Image (cartoon, rainbow over all chains, first blue to last red; front, top):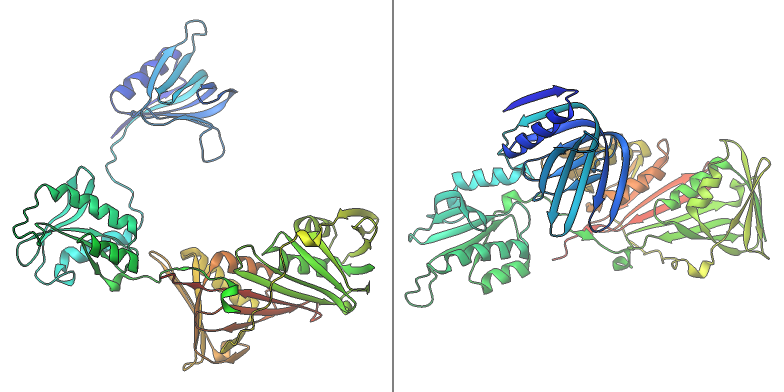
Length: 259
Length: 247
């Protein structure tokens, strides 16, 4: 991690630092007075004002007004960002473009109060609820709670569809793919497990035509009858770990149900 | 005909209790007072309100029915200072309500009552447990629960004679227990039901913090919450359906 700060940089410096930073995979923030032109699904113009400009190496550009959580203008990741000095104005111009859909955001900087290049390191992923990790730790430490004789081979194995929660082996030595859910299992979770299973379909080695070469297991505090049935029909297994049950919220009943 | 004078506070309390559930409602202008009954569009929360003619400075009515836009009427009532009087008079010809607050005149267009959602029938519930608490206790429980969860369990432990509130979040939990001596009254019976905080929070806004609120509870059954206002001349009953497992 490193940062380089520039106070009131001139136009050439602004254009050069933004270009260099984005090429080098660094993030740029700038406190500027600017105007913005957007052309794409609609078109529009934002007159001059003091704003925070953020450019990310993935092509994201955000123009933030002093208030509100959403940027007033933006370009999502995947676009191309260029910074240059305008021929006529002599002022820095940042242009973000993408082709599908065809969109273009042009930020004309009237004045740059501050500029920061931030070579940021961030590999962490946001974990929606800290407790799913707890459940993983529990299973890693107590695989016999899932099934007698189960042995964890790998925790979080990378596949082309994302990370498998556990790759394990049962008492017979048959591989077991395990998907863990912190909440009541849904059909979406079932679909996820099925996708992972497809990855192993090629490896399937049905000797007598009844036994799967790889077992798939959905582990969650509970599952509805539909999910259990879907698992059974697809030759997958559902294992409940009811200790992790939080009070399921259910849905609001209607007062008419009680008349 | 309808002509009445009422204190701004009483009018506001009346409207607030109903507007937590619905945007518009029918008001029955009975000869002994007004009556409002409304249910939210999802049929989850219901309110039944009466305000006796004695709660008014003066009151004359003969059984009419009007439909009102509650937020509009609340805005008007909000123009009055505490203790000021609000005069209401129905113009039968134009179907408008003339409202006067110390020289300020406001003519409110009414809504055709037939275009307002039908009034609910009150479910006849046999609820085994009854608790009387201070509004402030409910307020405290609801606010704490809201910090951790979207729903709240209300229950009565008959054996230990206590009323309890539980809220379980992903990481944090809230639990509140009130023993018999902390309660104004308790009729013990086993009860526990889960409710949406969205609704309960809104209803809680209407509870007077210094007044007694009577809760009637059952097992996975609606809760009935009752309180009086306008010095006992007004009465509100909320009913809220529980959250239940759909499978």
